[in-house]
Structures are given as C-alpha cells and as structure tokens.
Image 1: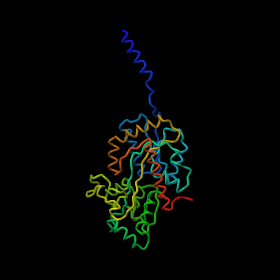
Image 2: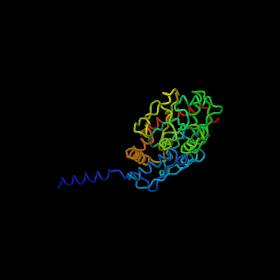
Image 3: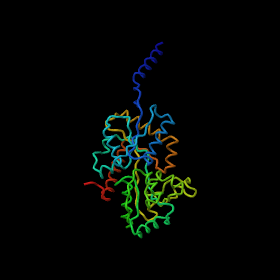
Image 4: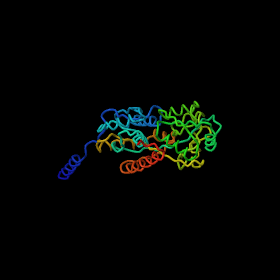
Length: 328
C-alpha cells in the first residue's frame, strides 16, 4: 500500500509539472503573398496550403492572400501593421531587403518575427524557343548587334530580375531595356508572345512554357547547376542547364523563400509555426514541389536564420547600391 501511495504521489507530481498544451491557431491562418497570381510566391503558398490540409498538420484551414499592390509594399505594410496577430504569415523573398531601399517605404524585416527559411530560388536566363540563338554567347552577340536594346521582362522594378539585367549589361556590354510586370507568370506569357526578348524568371515561373517547348533555358545564375536530373522536357533535365559562369557570364544570385510572423508574437506562437513548417518540409507535397520547381531545399530557424538574414541583407544592399537602385 505504501508503495502504491508513493507511485500515486509521483504520478500526481508528474501531472502537475506537465506544461499546458502548446499554443495553436483558433481561426484560419492567412499566408500573405507579396506578389500577384501565378508567380513563384503564389505557387509556393498554394503548395503549403495543400500540404497542411492533405496531411492534417493543423486544425484550422489555410487561406492564401495576394497583396502584390505597389510592387509588394502592400504586403509588407500589412504585416508591419499586424503586430501580435499570430494568424498571419508572410511568405518572404528578396523584396524584404530591396523594396525599402528602392522605394524608401517605412519597413524593415527586423520589425517582423523570423520563423523559417524553407527554400532557395535559383534564376535562369530564358529566351523564346523560336529565336535563332541557342546559347548565351549567341544571345549576347545578338543583343550587341541589335539596332535597339533587347527587351528584358521581369517582376517589379528595381528588384532581383532588374538587378540581374543590370549586371548582365555590366559584364557583357550588351544593352537591355527592362520591362516590369506584376508577376513572373506575366513575364513568362510576354516571352512566349515575343513581346520581350528574354527574362530571368526562376525555374517555377517558366516551367510549363519550357515543358511546352515555347521557351529555352540558356543558363542558371548560380555557382553550380540545378541538382535535379529527371527529364522535364523530352530531352532536358534541370541539371542539363549550364551555369552562366560555364557560358562565360559570371553573374550569380540566390533568393530566399522564408516565413515571417508579425512582430510582438509570443515564443509559443513562433514555436508552433517552426514545427508546422518543419512538418511541411517533410511532406511528399514539399519534396515533389522542390524537384518540380527546381528549388534548393533548406530549413533554417532561430539564430541560424537570423545570421543568414543579416548576411543576405548585406549582400542585397551591396548589389542594389552597385546597380544604382538605392533611393536617395
């Protein structure tokens, strides 16, 4: 009896010391996209939405909210003004560094709460498949010989697409006129229609038109080729695309895909979303999406994420300054 009493007392102590149930949302969670429909951020948000729902990772539903007005400033200000609202999550990319520099909007990513970096985007130089130039040298030679600057389309102004365009000019001496669109999906459509000569969309934004044989990848702006070797078209995999450096164009750029909560949320709320996105990264939907969209899988949180953000911010500021895009 004494032994049973001791066991019962120990059990009661354990129960009393067990922490309360972890925080979880009590209403739908809004994934905020700082871009228009059809772009890479929108596509990733839809993947996360599907992964959460199909794998029952959360009791509440996920809704995707497109806030791409003012080149994405709408989403940044929306998140900044949502302090303490743990039901809003921003899917962020280089916009968080570049737009405050180019447009002087009152926003700093440090005002939000970092949750996780969940992928890295590579960028590809694409031309229309009907054009006669089939590699970077032929493309650059044609641009140099043209009586008018080649038209380069991209998402937004003074952002990663235009920065890459400026650095292509600096490295080659070719002249381009940059045309901004609302999303990478729109830039892809313009390239298929021959309204522009090229774009630097990331893989996901040109995937379907590449598969349809309407556009041609010339090179990837990274120090290494895209790793995926399964055939995307009848003849090519992502890994078959040479790096731009291999082709004589030494320009490199990677872009984060990261999740942020508003400021002034609790550690328990952050922990819930870290756990949620870690689970998302382990789902078949995520793994399939990474390969199909040719993204680099990565998962950073906490101090590792903060260190990465500080370094990435400094690199993007340096690129923006050299390109002459920092507002005075």
